[in-house]
Amino acid sequence: MNKSYLILILIAIAALLNSCALRDDETPTISRNTFVPPTSPDLVMVNLQFSVIEKDVNNYMSCFVDSNYSTRSYSYVPDVISQIQYPIFQNWKLSNEKTYFTSLLSLMNESSTSNVFFSNPVLNTLSDTAVYDADYLLRADHQKTNVAKTLKGKIRLILSADSRNLWSIHKWIDFQSMNSDTTWSVLKANFSN
Image (cartoon, rainbow, N blue to C red; front, top):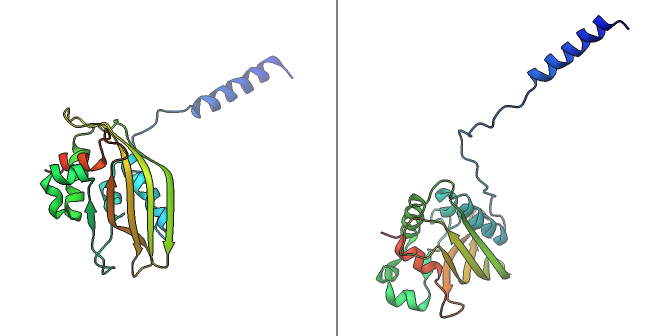
């Protein structure tokens, strides 16, 4: 093989490799979210976690009972101290859940961390109802200086299947694990206005 032929082949390979060069990532134009049809109670928990991580209010609200497909209505029971301290919990509804979560997200940077971890989970299922108990640790890097960013406690969720056989939360009960805990209820109360 002569030298000039070898040089032409190397130039062609170099040109080919140069045309396949990697480019910078583009920002996606559509939001990426994780929502799995909740055909079982444990999938509701997965969706709840991802709605917090991905800061997605629509997916968050999709974790709760939809009165178009169920005769059940939603109720929230805050921890005992929050129940006394925050009058808003006397008539807490799904609209309050949406207001709280939307307000929280509005005070978070796009790059800020939001996560919830459930530990020691116990799930008991009976035909069309399930009870989920767990300890939780919630992290929300919001910009409100007078509200804790790390919250912890115990959660009890009562879930049910609707007429579509999709599961959702119809009752949420929040507990303090220890007296020093700042619970999810405190976050909800402080971002509900």
